[in-house]
Length: 220
Image (cartoon, rainbow, N blue to C red):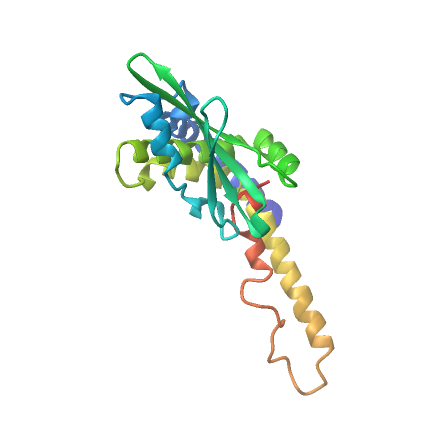
């Protein structure tokens, strides 16, 4: 069953991948040379620096986002997790372009203990990297145009990332089910005969199934 799910997911992804990736790249300005805005670089940079990056795309482990500006004027949003460890970073390079400004977004590995793992994951999983770039591009565009974040702009990239990672998600869910049954059997062995097992596996709701939640902590 596990192999069948993986094969089906792989076949579906091979069928839809070209369309999904093209749609995602068309919407994510980072796939090209960035987006042009009529405002001056200082104004664009100030608007982005004061913005709050939407962290709900990075799972329940994501907490606050911290904004900083590098020496070259690039705006960086650091997504923080438990103990304020960085989970991932998104950037917006702001440069003059004629009378206006060009903004190119990118996804960066975090500083700290998660760096090597996420760096490797981004290099190996282009669908996740494209998704995060698309989110960053939409955040920049909605901020500078003073409009609401449009989920429709990131949906193709979300679908592409989901299809691409379906085999892994299936494996994680299967492993979580195996762990649940192991814990349940262990609990049953400690219940006196005739008392049944009313307490289930004794774990909190979502454990261990919550380990399958998407986001940078589990995507790589």
